[in-house]
Length: 469
Image (cartoon, rainbow, N blue to C red; front, side, top):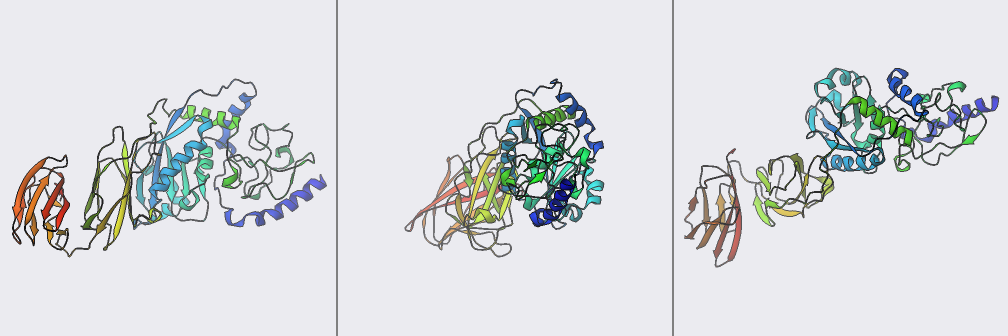
């Protein structure tokens, strides 16, 4: 006993030096009142009465993206889609497959953005979607990387803690579906006492630790790299290192890769008791959308008024668009998820080359490929001037144009102009005299294609017609 206590004292002194920077990995601390259903289930595991459900259960998840009161600090949508894809890989063995219940909800609230606990309990009920997993991404805070609040049944995750290779959300959803830490009883440096310290041989595995007999004894409640740099000692005097592969431990993200069989059975039981989840969902990978506007090399577009448009993809539930200067996707200037086949953007700036790309998704698959990037160039326009000048001799005004109004094409040299609808049908052909504008009044919304042929060659331009302007 003296040796054990001496080792534990040494173990306690080592913990702060093991991983100070990540000591706030998880803020979840489940109590026995939160684990009553799990304890009943665990007692029945030994009887063999529970059988793992065959097939896949599709689990709805609603993402809430928090910003401050000015709408700054949002979790990046591209990272969110990646996270959902990786989450489903992590949960493959469980039989769970998560799908978006709705488009991400954006919430501007300083208190929620920094994870203020009082605000969480006072406000999240106003934003929760019933019958789904609710996950909130916050922008700042030092209390945790992730946390599950059992009383309000929501998960909070710090943006920077759920990036490429992270398992923070996987860990917190384990809590959501009833799992305690593998080191249950040791949270925050607590000592559960000898009688509740799990033995390495598993002889007290139902009554100590996390209550699962197929997860190894674990006493480490601070973040650690694998393998653990020191040995633990169980009450029988055996030295060991904890299992770093279990998602519900505090091992580093790169070490974690699985839930145990009993943990997976418990999560399936919890999901059954919750009563949500469906048995069928389309998971086909969708082809990338075909861009309509802008088209390659479109130039002099007004950065404060661009409507991006694309062709519909059969089966698509939503579309993700990403715009970045020079095609530098790690520094996107605009991104959004929409259910339409167009979106208006007014947040670009300057005289710059931009690129945009598109992805079609449906609720059961957000992991498809992007379209090939389309490059275009913007030009700042004077207030009230929406002329798009194709080159030094040819201009189109206004562009975009409100439906029911006319736009004009004017050239400083003579030539022939042709206008086509978005399907390529010729609408009109006119000879243009130098300096004399030609006016055309489109009949419906859409993208109109123009071609001007002169002594300088052929120029192609596009005109956007929109009834909302």
